[in-house]
Length: 210
Image (cartoon, rainbow, N blue to C red; front, side, top):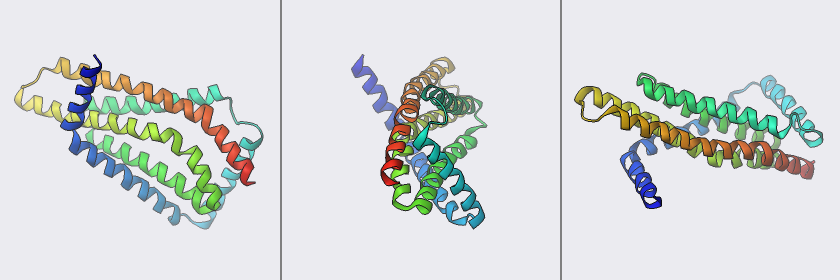
């Protein structure tokens, strides 16, 4: 069973290597673009965001804004909706460009968050970004990458099926859905880190650098 799973993973990566390369580049461009957006903000916009962040981190250093379980439920629900939307877009075929936009936006959010923290708070912002953004995204970004590539691949194969009728729909749809369900495990892990580990690390960094 283990060897079969490994074989399926190798075949999946081999068959979709070009899509993985393209989507990885797309996300990295989004990160870069998000960092650039920080520099385009007006002084008033930067001051407003910095004031909000200062209040947010000030509250974290004393009392959390919400319980860890509430934060977990909020994060998991948000990521699950995101994955579900990509799954639906993959089935629709016409949603193919929207999948690429969603992956690009994910990169922008990461780049903007890190870029703003570093530009406004220096080394303190760098360490805060390191503990608040990096841990969950080490899992989340690969999860979104897999979901995005799987949805894109499914859409492209659906188009080929309509033209050639060379592959039955049932097994293809089953594999597609099973991969999406498997990603939920990664989403659970990422949401757990964001809810139970990142706030503790953020509080530690904030207190040490205050």
